[in-house]
Length: 124
Image (cartoon, rainbow, N blue to C red; front, side, top):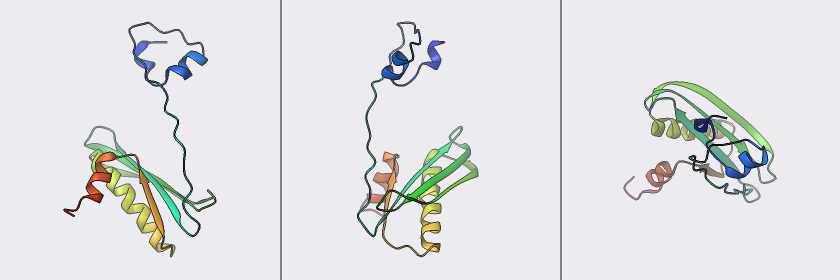
């Protein structure tokens, strides 16, 4: 395996017995747990990305109920956007679908720290 392809989690690489050159510094895995929303609520998990920031981009998301059941999922290809624009468009599109289906109580989850800070800023 070429060193540039060995990015990520040391546990996975070792468990697959993949030989690596020692100059690569791998990160340890972090266990992440998905939490269900409260009964009567829905959880919308979104993501957006841009190939070149800015460049062609895409968005997607999944909505689950309090039992973890998938209610809907979506993905769309977009034109040129930055990563920030793509993340915001993912949330916006998910909220549009959520509203159009008549749902009201939502918990939004994203992995984009910049977006969380932007949305929760008192300057909005």
